[in-house]
Image 1 (cartoon, rainbow, N blue to C red):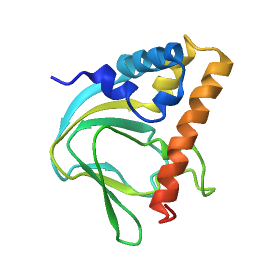
Image 2 (image 1 turned 60 degrees about the vertical axis):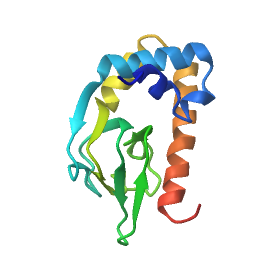
Image 3 (image 1 turned 90 degrees about the vertical axis):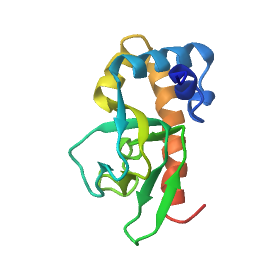
Length: 150
């Protein structure tokens, strides 16, 4: 069985947080997430979707990110998905790519709204800002990669 707390806490942006904030963020993710086993080929996000606020932390199996130009990138676990929609990189506030399970995957599925509410119940405004800065850096790197700039 996976040590989910280690998977969440080991995400690169989480390592930018101090130990106390990281522990509360892990707890918030755990409180609002549902463990899911998702079959290969299952659609997680559709490009240009602007309505949903789902996120996933994939801890087993690979996902494929399908860019609008037809290129596909494989993302290995552990990976956070759905973070780019939290920031408006191109002025459209939408999903930047279509994402599918490339293999059978195991993931935590959550709502970003519920996550922020849970974290906000224990974190100060400054800590929320710190979390969002770290997440924005992570999302920006993914955006640049998706644009072929990395």
